[in-house]
Image (cartoon, rainbow, N blue to C red; front, side, top):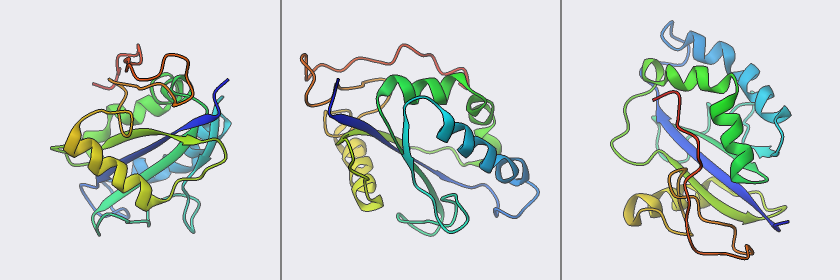
Length: 165
């Protein structure tokens, strides 16, 4: 068993103000999807602000929303993302979020018990954007094993095809 957990950050720029009719379905289901994540096998932690979600937190700039969480392993995160009601909202992401010209999701390993900061997460995303997938910052297409894995170093994709594509 690894002594590391998987951290993730994903970012998006809303297509309209959060209190608009365009964003209503997204905002009205946020608590439900967050609760689903919290009850999912492998969930460890998620970033939450004053209203128990991260919609008001803007560590990158005034327009960019963030979502950040920690999971026991890549398979647990993947199962939540691609095999729960969460995927219904991924399918609709273009209704609510602008198309990102560069990486908008980054994964990285943290020691179990470590809660990453938003500064740490933003730095990992910048690293992925600049260098591509490395053990320091990667994505679902190139999941590197945790640093204490017996076969460290070689990435492998999560064998999930995103049904939201």
